[in-house]
Image 1 (cartoon, helix red, strand yellow):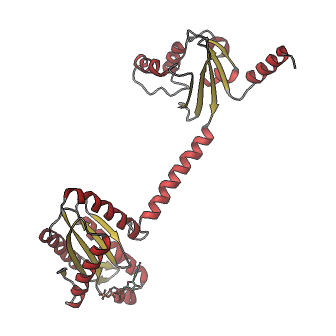
Image 2 (cartoon, helix red, strand yellow):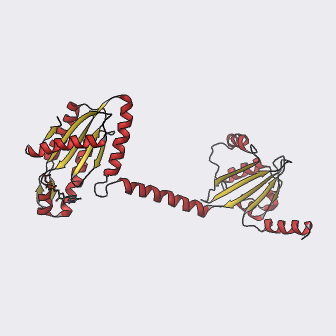
Length: 304
Ligand SMILES: Nc1nc2c(ncn2[C@@H]2O[C@H](COP(=O)(O)OP(=O)(O)OP(=O)(O)O)[C@@H](O)[C@H]2O)c(=O)[nH]1
């Protein structure tokens, strides 16, 4: 193929391309536009050629079609664009359109200062990307949340507690750790059935969660066992919080049809410096919880 034929073939491809092609001269005046470029910019091809880049943007801003120019004032937007446009020989960026489409723009500048702009419709990829992002968010949520009670599951609770321990290690503060365990929960399941047992767990979670401060960490660490991490909280303060929750639970039975299901919890409490590990906190609070069960249940016991 001789060079004339090659030029014609190339021009033919570019003219009929599904991608938009435009060329600006060194003064940013559009000297070439294929059909697609003109239609993406929402200006007829015979009108768009000859426009400067800035006038084209002003036009798009005024009609409110095409590129989504998120600005109150087009002149200040252009001021910003002047700072980045032509700042590099090659630029690649994504642009959203007022009709919801997305285009990938590539700008390439030759030695004379002429700029070739290519626009590629990437709406499908963008939708896919957004779908994937929200699926990842959903999966994260599922992986970290207890399905029944909607609080942190054991894994996510342990991670949050470890993060908080590292943070408070730097401040040298002490913290308290509580384990709540429902009393005679097996009886509730056996008497009223598993679905009502589930309702009890949700009810208890809500009662505990309402009594905590925004920065306390609550998680379901076992079947009917909940952990609470109280950062920067000494024993007497943690005891007050635990005792208040114990009382609330004891005074808040679950009403199911005509039946009132009375509830109570035993609570183990330990207070330590932040150099402790999760396993130690758990072990000590669990030992205190065991004493609370042994001591007759429905009580808070501090680890000694
Ligand atoms: N409904 C329901 N029950 C659960 C769930 N997870 C664990 N359980 C039940 O929780 C009960 C725990 O029983 P136990 O460990 O004997 O404890 P308890 O009956 O509360 O007795 P104490 O703790 O000694 O007061 C068992 O019957 C488990 O089947 C759950 O997600 N839903």
